[in-house]
Amino acid sequence: MYKLLVVGTVAFDAIETPFGKTDKILGGSGTFIGLAAAQFGVKTGVVSIVGGDFPKSYLDMMNERGINTDGVEIVKEGKTFFWSGKYHNNMNSRDTLVTELNVLADFTPVVTKEFKDSEIVMLGNLHPLVQKSVLDQMNVVPKLVILDTMNFWMNSALEDLYKVLKRVDVITINDEEALQLSGEYSLVNAAEKIHKMGPKYVVIKKGEHGALLFNEGKMFFAPALPLSQVFDPTGAGDTFAGGFSGYLAKTKDLSFENMKNAIFYGSNLASFCVEKFGTLRMEDLKTKEVQLRLEAFKELTQLDIELY
Amino acid sequence: MYKLLVVGTVAFDAIETPFGKTDKILGGSGTFIGLAAAQFGVKTGVVSIVGGDFPKSYLDMMNERGINTDGVEIVKEGKTFFWSGKYHNNMNSRDTLVTELNVLADFTPVVTKEFKDSEIVMLGNLHPLVQKSVLDQMNVVPKLVILDTMNFWMNSALEDLYKVLKRVDVITINDEEALQLSGEYSLVNAAEKIHKMGPKYVVIKKGEHGALLFNEGKMFFAPALPLSQVFDPTGAGDTFAGGFSGYLAKTKDLSFENMKNAIFYGSNLASFCVEKFGTLRMEDLKTKEVQLRLEAFKELTQLDIELY
Image (tube, rainbow over all chains, first blue to last red; front, top):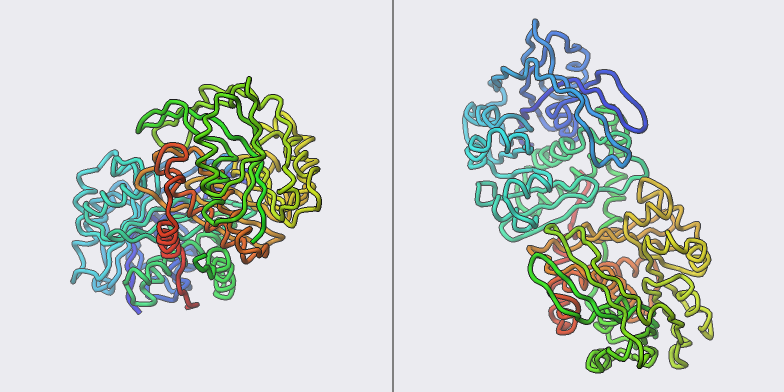
């Protein structure tokens, strides 16, 4: 099994959907990625930052699931990053109501000694310079570097993003952002251009429409499981990325063929994440449930077709 | 091999895309469905109506491909149905510039004797009463009735649509229209409600995001092939429906398992349709090309995954 290092936010979210509303609950890209990877029992270390207001019970919960949080700096006098958002009826769009960076404004990530030799590094959605700093601290070049990013950094730190992309093997990015980053109109052309920026593998997340994996002219597609109800989409993309990287760490196979399985597993885990508010579903998710739904996923796409 | 009866428009289209602009060219749901089904060499009869302005060469072209057009009424003194539209940059939306019903305004379909015993009937997008009239003319109840419709008929002839739906086995409908017809927010729930209106099988077309097949709690998904360029999306949905019904007619197997193959083939053919203006690509499409791309489709979705 490979060691997995994750950098991302550990944070508070307050969420409103057509089904209800939460106070401040546990959120953050590092949290969702870690919880998804924990499903595979891999040795995962999370690098992040929280304030003195962050409940120890949240860190305990992560530790119980095998997530090492020694890399989560606690700024006693500071406040934890807080995001609040409201989803519209169709769940495909949302409004951000509040973004308080708080301790995240001055975040300098510190990779603990134990994870400096991680074979897989998952760089969650953060400033490209924070992502780069994590790579700079590794003892050896990781076997696989995965980076997630969003349009915010393309608009505000594009040159820094270009620099870190040169050191990245896999980028995970949503469809609109892939078009923005590449200036193209089709995802196929976008993937080709993004390849040239560094990543050999381009994973394009299409939300409820699934995910595409591109690698030097090869393509693979994993659908999202059609659900009768999406309760809260928050964290689905990070759960997907955590499932993807966790599966690769578990299987120690970084081939294109195995990445197909990895995005399948990522989609599978994301389909659970959206069933409850925040991290709730991922916290109580059982291996047996994951396996059963994986069978449903196979039923959804696999067939035995002959040429006519 | 089953006999396939198609009712739909045979028409003129004028299309503008970011890549160019056409004068009046061959179009219509019956035309696209027929050309797709022709790929399987099934005995296909098209019921439609055109004006005296419709070139005989178009009918000759269809006949050469084995499509029986005896059911296409020619109104010498009338004008052919004409639609004109303009696609936007991302090809996902379009404006209708002109709709001239012309001879279609008084269309009473007549099923020729030869096709009154067709085992499969494909009711292309037309007024529900026209669709119903075709069913009324059959000598025996067909083994499979497939119906395509759109929001226009939901808005203007909903009660008639409900009536014909009771006699339909498979409905093909796009995602937004499925939500509208059912009043639901998720496609899973929409399919369930539409089942109750009659169709045992619900096929939801999601354009570039593929298609879903629902049958009494079972689901299957076929993606659309990601293309570097979509030249003209006109007719893609009808080509999908033609590929679906043509494959079923060819294989004479109406099971859910075989319908999976049918929507795979439908998606495959639709991916060709969009490569050139109007029917041009479908007219010169070779079996070898279809088979090669089917392999690409399999590569795109098929994998050999094990439980971890």
